[in-house]
Length: 234
Image (tube, rainbow, N blue to C red; front, side, top):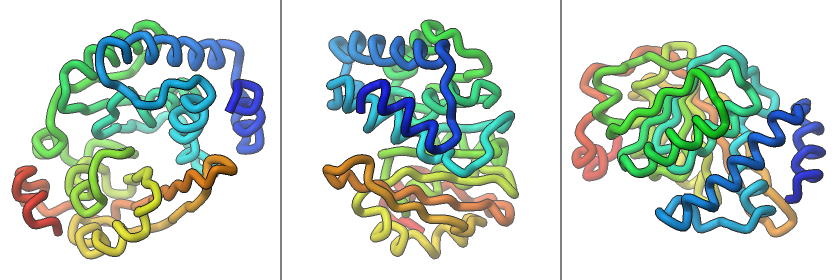
């Protein structure tokens, strides 16, 4: 996906990028590639692939959704996906990024400065620990390529406000993971409200975005320690 295709595909979904936003995406790409030589941030480095498989893919969760002044927490954001592309396009979002690797937080701090982004908080922490002290704080919680859904739900849903939304960006095994995770999602206070299946391009790069609404408070015993979550998912 070249830049023109990126612009056109977003326009089809009512996203019209300004020149400043286009420059921010270009700076994002250049910074990602530069830092990727020093640390393992992504295996995807071809420019057209980054625009398609990182930038565009991140933004698909906002198609037909209302993103504006909400608080959004991105769990295990890695190199900033999906939260940083969302922040570029929706600058009024208040972003919190949690990652367990401090070197990725260091990269993200540099990136946020380079992109001149405001209202972005970067937290070096494990999601299950952060979730014990920041319960039900966020309107939206996102996670992309972090863990299987039966584990991911317990890491993310406790962070979501009642009435808010957990959005999981999944791939080929998304539906299979949902079957394993459905009971746990309900125990945590969530309810599946929408599933979106699509391919990113003609090469059948399958995507499965799952939207879970927080219907009631998560019981205080969740999240458990990561070893317990992994050993016995809900």
